[in-house]
Amino acid sequence: MDPQELSQRLSRISTMWTMVLQAHGEAADAVTAAQRVLVQRYGGAVYRYLLGAVRDPDAAAELSQEFALRFVRGDYRRADPGRGRFRDYLKTALIHLVTDYHRARQAWPRPLATHTPEPVTPPSGADGECDFLSQWREELLDRTWRALGETSADYRAVLLLRIENPDMPSAEMAERLGAQLGRPLTAAWVRKALQRAHAKFADLLLDEVAVSLEDATREGLEQELRELDLLKYCRSALERRGGQGQ
Image 1 (tube, rainbow, N blue to C red):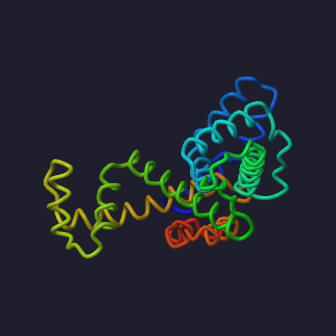
Image 2: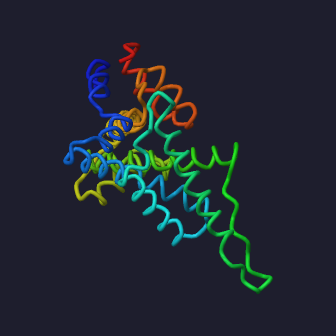
């Protein structure tokens, strides 16, 4: 993919801020569609963070549903793209949700048993930021792997095998993949497929990151990738995009 094509594709991506505004608009069909996209797209990141904050799968699932309910009923309609990145907005909303949960827990009648554990204190400050970034990063990578598999099962298979077996010779990889994919493969095919799979993964991951940014220029993307420790995966895609800054 040449830089112009990649730049054009990124410019066509609706940012999550765009979807947030649509989700609280007046057109009923657009509102429903935007709400569905947002909840489905970041439901995994929401649950991951909540599970880490409350340490209880059932409570995390209930809080995830509560977040979706608050969103659908319009609690976040005053969100402002001018105040920062979408992931910062999402993090703040989740922190408030967890805080409300712990306040409610503390107001419950205390059990008589002295060995009953206290509710887990939600992460705050630098620890909370690192925890949220970690969950956000994992969700982006998971979505990218799914997108790669939907684009090409071959690319996903060859890249996974290389990651799991970094020192495996190409000829052996061809034999293993041939058995897995049900057709004869060569070492040359493996090398070429790996090259293309790496490039495609980088492009798809860059797309995923760009969706959450209002400033999807090269500079904005690079800064976000550095903060998420994902630049090593996307450097090639950024280079292909060039300095157009679109």
